Image (tube, rainbow over all chains, first blue to last red; front, side):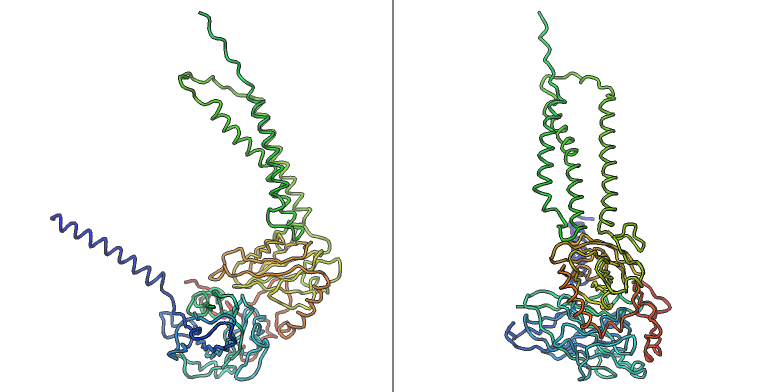
Length: 230
Length: 323
């Protein structure tokens, strides 16, 4: 084998290895769900209100884990549902949240999280009715929660309540029809910029230890971050 | 030609001993009076103060030993180094019974003293703030170890019982003597014994109330008891000290040591605030097992859907499985 061929082979092999490493870093280590931006055009601490919309589905048909429950967030510009749990909001601003609850009920591990805290008036509106506490053991009432521990926010997201509804849940995500609840509430973002993690407290990781693996520990499904910007 | 007079060997033991004495004394005084007041975990509670005292005592005992070793090392390099033209072998060294006996005696005495001191400190401070399991060896007066005892209303002289419940990714605190409410905020009265009954409802966590000198593992199905007595008003930082999942690093919260009157006022207000959810909680027990929901608490539709437990209990047949 001539010298140019050997050098060429060595170079090609080297580039293949480097390319492989770059591919792995970009696609597996740095890749993540997108961030939905609700802060554009809003001045922090200005008294303006921002409305955000989420939905939670019993499954998702948009990833390689179709049996994982998942949140979706609606992009305010495109009005499309985005498979992510990352969103950006302005600091010191009132956030009006709407969550469409398309999933069925599941008892909370700790019924304590059935109490609404950290919202305006410590209540949520379930289909327009103010509610302060949901009993997830005594009634089919809670599907998931939307909790930001560092600001004391905890909202049990109501589920359809009847047996019939729970047996005919939406099967294609993001859901646009099927039994669901509409949960609304308001809270104020902290004045300090930063990343505030949020999570679900219902053990909805089907097939995982205590129901707290899989989607419960994966950003983009049942936990994520609220980025507060100044 | 007459041989040159032999050079008189200095008394190395006195040199080393005197230098060591001066350095060790200086180090111990600095440790005790300068560094000591700033050593962790502070003095907010008797257990924290006791831990700081223990660290000071151990540092004061260890410093002279470390200084002796380093001093002897440095002295050897400086005084007994090979000099130019000195190609002779060193003198043969045999055993020295006095040095060996002294070394064994001194080190044994130090270890035995620390053993006695440590045991006394554990006994004296009722476990030194560490989790002692469900049957503690060291108990302060009036310790409440059964659920029935813990649910009796609090009265002066009894420890304030706080059940610490670890869950991904937050600690909650239940106060069985004050109506049984549960909260995310840890409030404690000053100058009262506090009994933490630490447990978990999912994976293993570790309750670390830094300024209180308390650290106790939170294991599911286990009641891990730890005691402390806050002696100063101040802020408490609580962290999870056991890697427990994605947001372990964010599993921390803050609490407060307050006056007894303020604590009782806070407990009353919290009891009222959380009344709507307190009645939904499972009956108080020293552990907290959510995998089997009491039948009388199960709703009709929940039962019809086969949801008899919260997590684990209704994921047959392959639960638990790991990815």
